[in-house]
Length: 123
Image 1 (cartoon, rainbow, N blue to C red):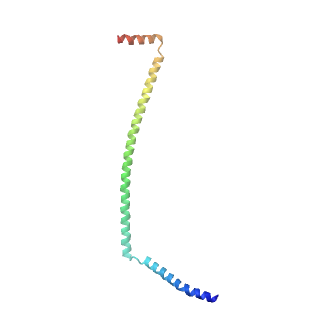
Image 2: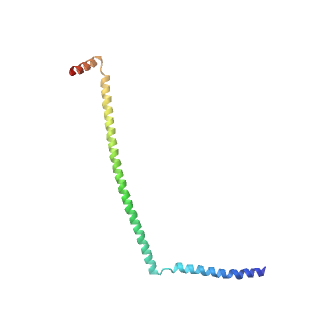
Image 3: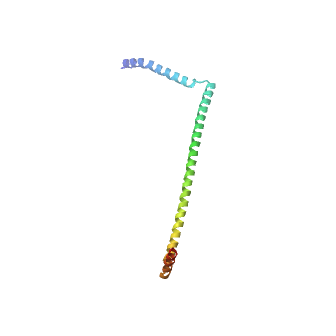
């Protein structure tokens, strides 16, 4: 059993050293890729790119807002037209009701006078 352990440990130990070396190289590469000045330039470039993206987003947002304002103006005009038409309809209903009420109040003598006067003028 101990012999098997020694054989396995002889094979695994170089693998551990190899993996440890790769991990050390990765950390070294990650933290030393840029010098201090290069990091600042890199970050400034990224900030400028982000600022351009934000500016583009603001421009497209402004265009969309202008379209929304145009649609709102059109909707306001249609609403005003609808309200005007509704007011006209209400006025016509009131006029019709008042005329019907006037006719309902006529007695037989008034109806006779109404038709007599109406057809006298046509002759």
